Length: 127
Image 1: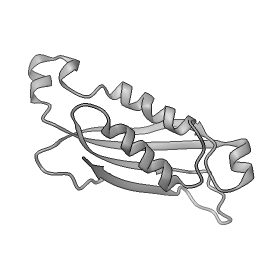
Image 2: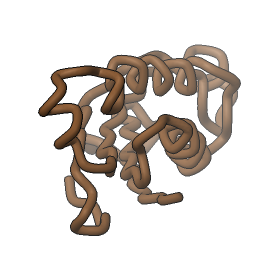
Image 3: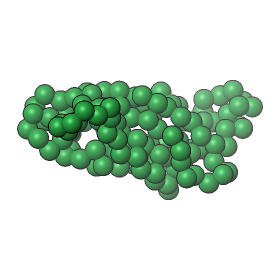
């Protein structure tokens, strides 16, 4: 996963955050739901202070970020994974120390009529 963050930001990476959501344009997607997987690259202010102090207060609690992502996936349904990706990005940017984020939303069970491995949307946002 690549990002286009400023070189002065450090990165914290979460891959494969998974939850069941009811997103999609078709009735059966809204009724039955499906698994969504999300990869996140957080562009954060220098982690040097956290590394030196060994104190979570000086960095991003990635467990809390993962929980926030799950809450979005399990939250109110949207039609498009593009909308889901933007909502997740906005939520990640609410965390202290996060200045940019790349979010990839995977929808491996998307209703596509031909064989495929995955469909995903990747966005990058910054504040």
